[in-house]
Amino acid sequence: MGSVLVHVSELREGLIDNKNVSLTMLVEMYRIKNLESSRNQDVGEALKNAQQSLKGLPGCLGQRLLIDLDNSGAYIAVSYWADNRSRANANAIHAALDRALQGFRLEKATTVYNVVQEI
Image (tube, rainbow, N blue to C red; front, side, top):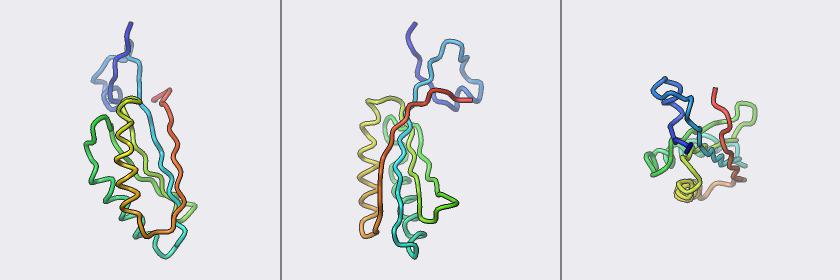
């Protein structure tokens, strides 16, 4: 039997019978560490604005911006992708984030995960 691609929220809300569904979603995490503590709020606002400008990008199931509560100035821009093919659009998100963050002293890294369980 083939896989059926569904949005995680449809499973949570009971809109889809999950007996015959294979959950597929890639999660990309773009970690940003601001090296100038006096500009943490500016970096956070720039990240929020950049993500908002790309709302509804094809294949993107959603985005989140996380801030590390124990490490001031550390952010993770999270994007959720339907599949590896649509994740190619992540380059647009990275480019927008990079443009928004020009002029800040930062460390950046990207990691991609496949969701294997949703409870």
